[in-house]
Length: 288
Ligand code: ATR
Figure (cartoon, rainbow, N blue to C red):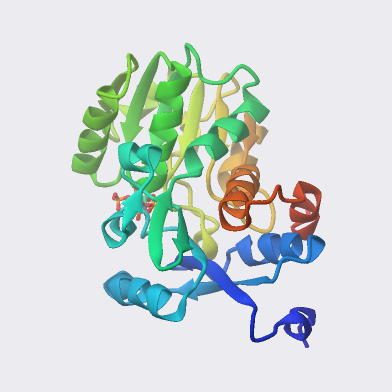
């Protein structure tokens, strides 16, 4: 059976991730490896919580004394209303991905913003300053991406989303965060926006779990002048990353951002610096 069970005692604290779907999540592997590496008496599990049960799940966190959770698709915005405190960055972004339970008081944080900024630098070492960006998605993850791009000083951001009204709302909100020009773009306008862009970010959940073959944008908008950051990850590179690389674009998937935000969650929960080597080694996977 599982090696972890042997170390669990009556004093072991519980942390986890709340999402829907969540069975694909690598966070349990990453965090449990890091806890083990430093003898931290916590265990990390995945909770598949449908949106209509999120309120109950947060009551459960309080009742059971769960020490902290990560919050992922599709709950990052809804979770904001279920907390006692929200840190200023998460409040600005309007989305929470990490919750700390300190003696019954729940505080929300957003570690996606710096996680994304760090992952972006793997394909664009100088960050987004002066770049023309296209972001697919308008949920909580997209809000964190826009915050990072605006903070970096991106030249422009075009937001594309299946539900266009959401793209319009998000681009309006982000326009007020800094000097970056933010507008929504329709499906018809997407090819022209992508042709003139330096950076494409997938902040939708398309390509996740059972939908690994799906693409968030038409494949023919990908070109060699683009850097591509896909927030989605899987057992190997996502289809978007593979198609982008085939067309000569530099592309990175969601693994690096996942590791960066996991490191920050670990610091928030334990007060310790994590072993990033242990975290990285826990998810060694096939490339190709
Ligand atoms: P999160 O908070 O993690 O960003 P979310 O708020 O549910 O999760 O956002 C998911 C994003 O993926 C949204 O932009 C969503 O588009 P809609 O606003 O139209 O729902 C997008 N998304 C999810 N499934 C999709 C699909 N099959 N095709 C296109 N976009 C999809």
